[in-house]
Image (cartoon, rainbow, N blue to C red; front, side, top):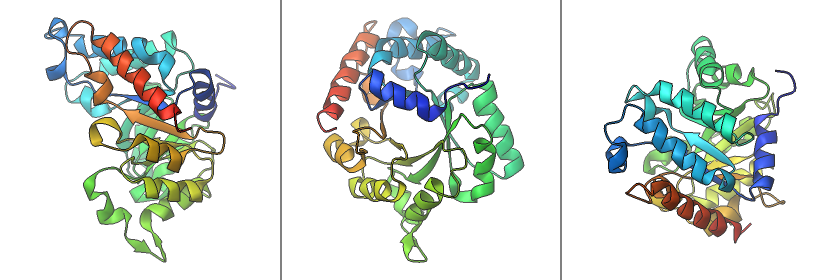
Length: 274
């Protein structure tokens, strides 16, 4: 596969084609599924595929979270889901949200898992163990590597706000990730929507590097503040993730149509401020 489009190429194309900065997170919880899917062996795949098919023209990316599949022995359904997205909705990048982070030789295996087993276009990675733990992912020159930088959870500040030589640790991560670590040009960063001032600070450090922004919707992040803080000069640069608010918008057999409605509203709300 020579000259396959890179993750950043696909993202740029999806931003334009679908006029969208919305990323739909796929966090399937069978306890919340509509009654007609309960008890089915393929329920996780069927639920997620229906959401994908209903929203694919409204998003810039999909982000399946691996724990929701692995905890229920549904890794085969995750493989099938990513294959389904690539086949039915080519060009929409798939981010495997697995937040891997380990020493080089183990990271090589996690990279094989993400990019060869699951065929994801990008993977989330915890950079806490430093550059050699990130390099194995960058060895795939067309794949995205999305490093945790300023996370949306309440405890994020415990470490991310520590002073390291006159800058905060999250600022150091942003600086390294956007400069000397970015050997493939495919690095992005995770910055939570709950901290618009820090989104703006990261944008200032990294230039046009894409930001994956979780935390709108169920976690309460402000869409306007997020977009104003994080957009690039051309009105892109963001993958704004919403999961539960879209996935569980509907409770019955029309759940996918309900998800589409919320996805459309979310995309359009984001676009008001681009």
